[in-house]
Image (cartoon, rainbow, N blue to C red; front, top):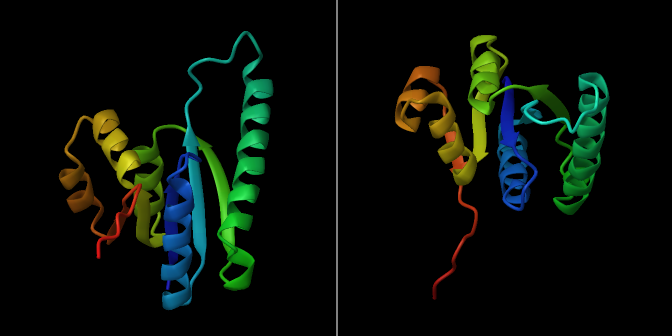
Length: 144
């Protein structure tokens, strides 16, 4: 089976999203590609190469801490972290079109943001990619 693409933005919801992707990958006996897409909008007078290096190093450090919190090493599921410049929706579309992934996992907040970036409805985006998408809520409220 192809990999599971886990789109994250390294906010507080990313832990639940990564955890769900790893659980799904363990069940399907595959690996996870954790994708952090970012934009080069402001770089505070730094050169683009320096800004990119700094941004990706900080993202890597945050991701490593996130990985420890979800205890990914105990699952045996390989997790690859990739940083890419661009809109999240465009980067997901690239992985789908390249036939590299069989599932997408992302937070509800990221899904809403993608909807705003693409100018399409999220439903249209899901129908266009033609693979299963798991949207993880930011907070799960348990009732008794």
